Image (cartoon, rainbow, N blue to C red; front, side, top):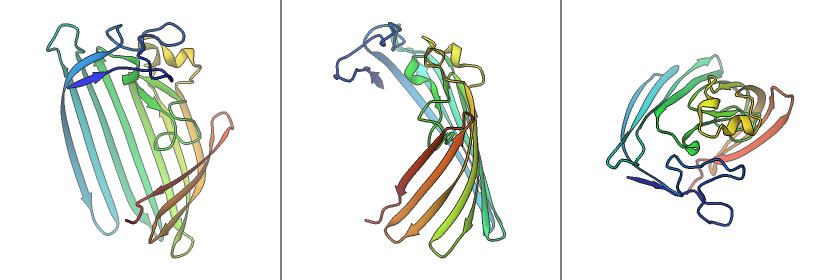
Length: 215
């Protein structure tokens, strides 16, 4: 059971954005939905490579007349393998939604974990999406790795199908490519990642993150 109530920066409930377009599917200050979820996973690995695939399907059930009815799916496929001392990782992510939809349910494209070189969701937001990532890492010493990467993403022309057309109103291109390089530092206290990416407009973005912190 999901109850979604959008708020503004002052934490006040809203039904429309600054341009006067609805931010909910119902047109009121909230959306209600009963969602059934199913997720499938597959993984295979050996000493030289691995393969993973996951798919998630969500179905909105119309318990009441104004509740959202939709079907949404998302998949992630990835494969990695050794190239001598280096490691190549590729992944493909995609998804689509049909039926009732609010703007906040759109697939956001851009940012770390999507298309580097852009801000979060700056490439586009649509009913559908497809994002491809390729990254090659290579050891520099026992604790430090270098990386080069290429990312690309598109809304498959579905940005105009999102209610209120927010992607077009905000000038999002709908597709984009980012490439760059980075460093990966592994220590007993956690993993640190530093990336520098350039997008299709020759704009540079630097990302820094820390993961797997030791307790």
